[in-house]
Image (tube, rainbow, N blue to C red):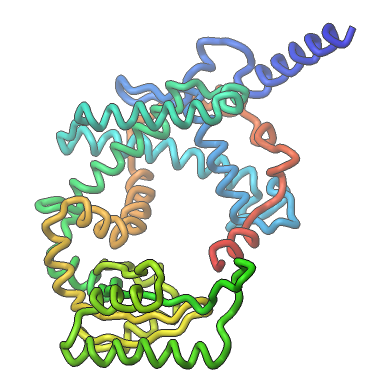
Length: 361
């Protein structure tokens, strides 16, 4: 009896989903938009609509139901459908630019697209299929789109591109937003006889600070390098070396105390820094030298370009997408997709406050 009841419920759920998303199979409901020979499946539109719902949730506080909220002076359902439509337009804009710029996907890039799709599909295929999103739709709307978007970005902002960024602009951004340093640390805890971690006493902290400041004097006098100081301290304290080799780091990712100290420290100078859990010896290196090294690494330059112009390009694509012509929208099929179908007990309320707290932490 229980088995029969479960089967009836399963059939009922499948029918409800079928009616909710695509109105059961109908050739006219299988596509969302067309431009030339490129057709966007209805599953890809559902993916964009669901992504838009998640974006809406990020705009709404955790005490408010997403679909009862007002976002940017629009009711949530309108905001979500408008955003999904913008995603469709962006899809076609990027495709147009990809073709116009004569770009192609390499075998390696296509393999990466396939691997990304497989990973996403393996992780959430049950949920995606229930929403009416096929694997091919996921690949077209997400993995392949992202790869082409990145190639268009690189072509437009790279050398000779329509929005090309000069070396001088890149260097200015790099030197203003990155720091280059090496360091080693000493914890403000020790292990007692029972193997438990305990805080250092005031006297032990004072002695430790004096030890590190002696190393700093030697480093600044040219008597030893910071790596030699780190190794010497490790041997003297019978601990593993905590030396961190020279590395450029974007300032926003630095501990605020470290960031503020580096901003006021001269190049080629060692300084003492105290954080909540460690004493640090930092040695600041010229950031301009680091840029010259990064210039020789294509991956580093693309990462830098992405940080510098990524948000600007996103806005540019949104603006240019509004000008795309020749797209036929299957409004009948698109209107069959109910935004409320994405709502579950776990996601019906917003997440904006929680997101802000997590970002702060």
